Image 1: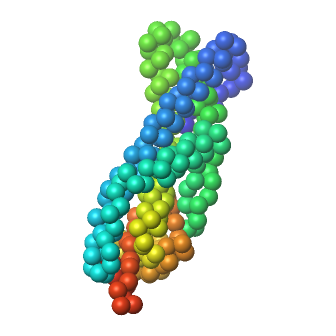
Image 2 (image 1 turned 180 degrees about the vertical axis):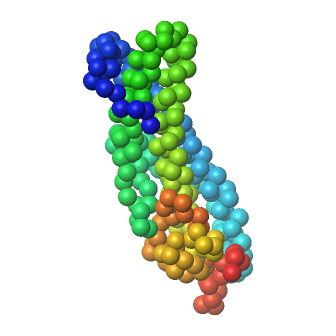
Image 3 (image 1 turned 180 degrees about the horizontal axis):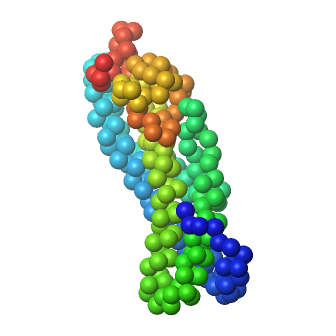
Length: 237
């Protein structure tokens, strides 16, 4: 985090420089948001491709009809999900994370802008003091904005990737007739107590807690039934 600027330092900035900072920060946020949105769509397709063989394995073991679902079959939902994410990110200034097993909106994007502006202001002041060339100024601005952005995004990006993986799995399970899932943990000392209680527990799909809490490494597997027995992919015991 940059040091807080004094009133005297802030007075060194002209109105033109403040306008420049506003534009730089806005463009920076838009560019990074674009990368996040593109990555969101890619995560959906990756999850579908990885999950379909698991679903088919479960169905085969249970002796039920094996789905002929293809990754492209989820394209409509994927497009609406990416658009929903875009609106959350750009229009509402944040996205959903998981807290205590449920989705919660976090306006990290809106909170990010003033911090980026402060970082940029500090760089502009240093540029005036040390006579930066335009190229050096650009490099230092990108470095300062990137550091601030990445510090705040590190946990958020991980949590968001787990959230979309979770949402994609649930949509895919519902579309392929999977009504139950089982919760697995890593079974080590780092697993939080609330998640330890879920180890091996079978849930109705609609009632399973959400994945994606910060630091969570748990996952869910699909279950289906054969002669009233629950069949899974043979995940870890």
